[in-house]
Amino acid sequence: MSDKTLKGGEFLIKETLAADVFIPEEFDEEQQMMAQTCKDFTETQVMPNIEKLEHHDNELLIKLLKDAGELGLLGITIPEEYEGFGQKFVTSMLTVEEMGKGFSYAVAYSAHTGIGTLPILYFGNEEQKQKYLPKLATGEYIGAYALTEPEAGSDANSGKTKAVLSSDGKEYTLNGGKMWITNGGIADLYIVFAKIDDDKNLSAFIVERNTPGFSVAAEEDKMGIRGSSTTQIFFEDMKVPAENLLGERDKGFKIALYILNLGRIKLAGATIGASKATIDAAVQYANERKQFNTPIANFGAIKHKLGEMVIRTFADESLTYRASQNIDDAIATLVKDGMDKGLASIEGIRQYAIEASIAKVFGSEVLDFVVDEAVQIHGGMGYSAETSVERAYRDSRINRIFEGTNEINRMVAVGELLKRGMKGELDLLTPAKEVAQELMGIPDFGSPSMDYFAEKHKSIVNFKKSILMVAGAALQKFTDKFQNEQEIMMNVADMLMYTYAAESVLLRVEKLSGMYDEAKLAIYKDMLDVYMYDIANLMHKIGDDAVNSFAESDEQTAMLMGMKRFTKAAPVNVVAARRRIADQLIENNGYNF
Image (tube, rainbow, N blue to C red; front, side, top):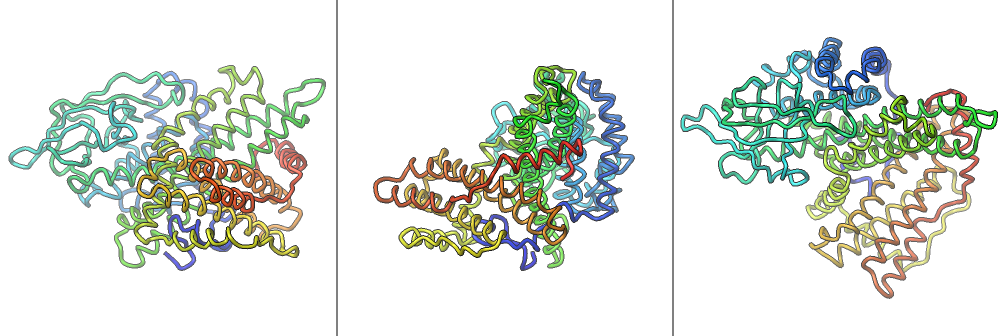
């Protein structure tokens, strides 16, 4: 990575300059054209067929995936030598955002292009890549990923599916089954995880659908994402050629973890598109629906909802693309230093596992908020299956479970941060000690002449201090048992997530200040003001909850005073700011930020 790019998780202990982050306004013409192709495909091919897809028309689903393959939309990041476009990671995220507007089709698309294809790209040998990647890139093959079992969900490595190597070493015999497999009923190729003999860890296999002993159960009847195929799959004395072992024996669990990191941030990208599409539906309805002889968009209560939907979506977009570019930068640096592109991609994604988990949790919870408010804006009509927001509401709920539940991802973010601190990859101890000493000193109230962005940066620095204060004290008290204090870990995870989101919004708006005049920038400052104000108060509550859960007497008093100091927020007229944001949304009759 370049000197300017912070390592994964390092945002907590170092300041980031606005000039060093990527913002969506910087996408170039070629990237925008690719996004437009995805947008056109979603609007003209997917949306008119959503109802048919929801009734399990798998032939149509297969056709739409193959049509996307013919347009090159399945091979955005696959190298050109394997029939792909060879684009950067951040470009693939933009295409995922546009596809994310396609409801359950987006799930099938994301599963194929992400977890169904990339394990071969990143972990396959050259023979496997040559054999399978061109077919996956063009849509000749549809991909799926088979990890989950009835007794192995969050604890994925406890899977019972077994693989036994033949005495001549030429093939494996697999027995077992997998559940909740996206694209399960339509895929031609599956990345299957199983334990070889009595191995402690999983291994990964490339399995073709037409293999004898392979069978697929009926389609699951789901709450949402009904247009995607979700099935159980079974293996009964299924023979898999030895050359279809993906990566090394006993290293499949690492493959699973790396691919989950990838799936997490990809999911965040899809939530951006889904949120924007839902906001469009909500504001268009609010502009059309009249009550008391006026469009309901004119009512303050509706403007509050619309404004808040925009602010949270803007934050989701800001942090997700920030992290995505960090991944690209890390990959580019590793390749420059001589690492193989596939290995560099794996390491680049691993480096930002903390940010990937944050993005997944944040994006899925923003989308849940947005779809819920959209239904409310529609009133009774929002509960009708005739409206898109009813479908959006049902489809959104799975995202907090997909790619590791949000609870697991909160634990991953904090656990990975602490692990890197213990290994010396991140120096968390020094700043944590400095914060502890600061609690004993005289508060720094800042300079009254501080400019707008400097004041916001000071707030972010203080948010980070509040995290270090809580995490440091909790770790000191519980030592290696801290991981068992899940409620406190969740508190720390939320503080970490909201701080990363607030800082991402700040850096984006600050960078925009060099691109836009003050009149155009004003609406983005409104978003930043409201978000920072809200997060400060939220951080205060979460931090107090954590402190009161383990601290006592003088330590508790000092930490509560510190929490109040570190989460202090300047007054903001949030009503006026949200109204201005909503008014621009209403005037444009759609999301245009």
